[in-house]
Length: 348
Image (cartoon, rainbow, N blue to C red):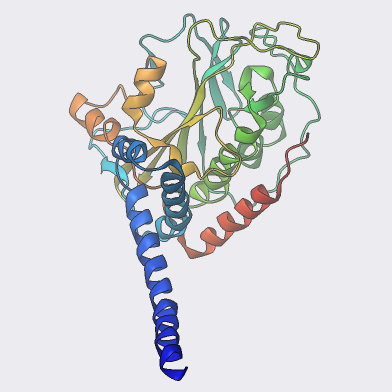
């Protein structure tokens, strides 16, 4: 009997040694996979069994979350700061977005700490811009209980969203604006000219994650300019209906975008994301990295219009393959925030 048992023991030891190596190789390969261009990833995902593609993407994004934050992997999009470049008056980084083929008319609204281009035809903002700077304290006043219509544009009422199945999604975020500009600015973020319909999973998941990084990490190191906006739905898409199926006339965006800009060590650094309405609550924001040029095509807006065409191409054509590194301490902060998100249970 003994000669038969020895090979089994040897195979058991080999398996125990081989398993960690295979897991390490799978993790490294998955990390490499999620840093490739989005078009390449999509093409590969179509060739692989769905469960394999999902495992690679999930594992790769989980690992890249930490290797990117530590600056070990990924690539930023940046150019040297042009010699004649002068940032525009806050909250704009250079020139405001230019409406080339966007819904007309867009109504400009200047608020305390942020600006809005409101689309009356859609009944929500088309873009919102703000600039955050480092502050000594991130304390904020109590959050207002309700939203109010903006008399400047006759924006929707608070109750237009009630029972609709969509959150009242801030574009200029409550926390980021209140922590930099105070109570008056915070109240203005609760005007419905500053909100768009967002699915709860999006608003309380990856969107919240992005806002956390921008307000509590990136902007605590150096000024950050942000442009946020809505990507219109396909023609004929249904409009928002509130409790009881009452029509509101509010268009439901198909997706939302973030464009982050900073002057980082003498370079203009850009990070852009397109986050769809159906994004899962546990999704990693890095999964939605995109190029500025993609956002321009979807929105009809022109960003960085005050820069020469060659420099615009350098900033707008490539997509970053990582969010901005956060360092060891702030990686822990992001981890804790993600644990809170994963523990959240959507109301039924």
